[in-house]
Length: 118
Image (cartoon, rainbow, N blue to C red):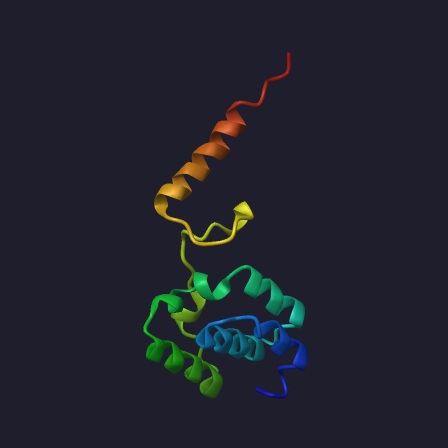
């Protein structure tokens, strides 16, 4: 992994508080050969928080990341994302079903309020 991760990658990971989150990003960056720009995009987009693995026990996360590092096995928990993470809104964070409905209604209302040509 050390030959695929540069010092610039490490600098991007340093501000992260959670060691499992850091390990997740470093492991995926090495496995998927992410550039520093791609790594920054994934961190800013909160990829870790959106994946199914983030809600699992720490030991399970460590095991999945180890499996990816050792055997290049990408599991569904590392791939599948939360359906309620509304990246397209430009907002940061995770949202409930209630929030999703409110945003959808707001977008729909905005579309119907546009005046038609006279």
